[in-house]
Image (cartoon, rainbow, N blue to C red; front, side, top):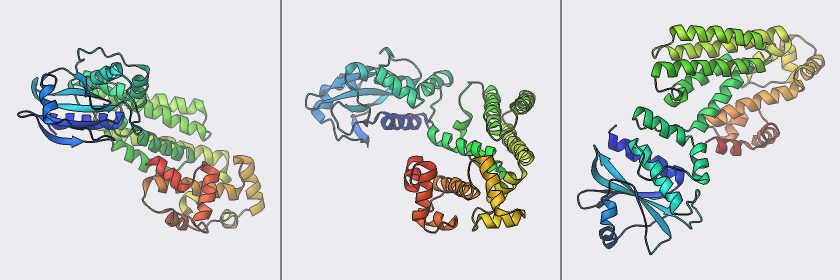
Length: 382
């Protein structure tokens, strides 16, 4: 991917982040070559292009305002090997009802211009980068400050994957470790490891970065095992051993395999302790994991485990706080959450797969356990 393409993609990222439209002009002739519009249809006519020729040919970010519209315009130069090849004009409306992150004055616009310039060219602009509270909170929320710092360190254009989406996948993986669901935990860590951004930007040194990533993986996996009843002392001790092994062995060729081994290790540790702590509950969970798409009742589980159904339900209640029927439904809702997030199956299809009587039954139980309908949950996760 060319440097020019990288910069265009980064401009698109910023336009989505701060919800502005931008137009791309190129030399010679200052012709409009591409147009990315968001919530506004402002354009420059030929006379205005002529009037603002000095602004459009500057190598530094400029700010101006059209008399005919209530919008500030940021002129961000397009530089290729320090030669001006054109400019991006970013239109920042001050009174649009649809404008999400409103820039209220020229000071805010100055800061936004400096931010864009820093991200594109890895050097501060002459405009002092002193974000207002509003822009500061936005940059913090979208992890954009880390992106800009990384730009300065590595001289690379970084395009962040949707980090919220990665976080949701990670939560599901940790739930799988806690539940002792090895197949699900392995599938989720495999998915996460396919996304380069998941390793993060803790260090500019690639080897140090993957080793720090291993440490983070050990910490969060051990916490998930603790939540399942694994003694903290044991999980921490094993974690120390894993980290020491990583320091000696991990490199850019094997860190993914090492990460998979960590997740598998803590999931198996959870399974062992769950089996020792409460064999019946462990066997119930294993049965549910293996037969979740089959009709499941209290009677079928009790028969499978050769235990009285009433006794088994009371035991489940004492160990988990839920009756066995509620425990079955909880596992079905966990699986429904997974399907809503990772498949395109309809709510009706999911209700049939999980043997609910109809979609409304699934919706009612789903809301009871999550506070949302399946459709609301899927929309939130997209």
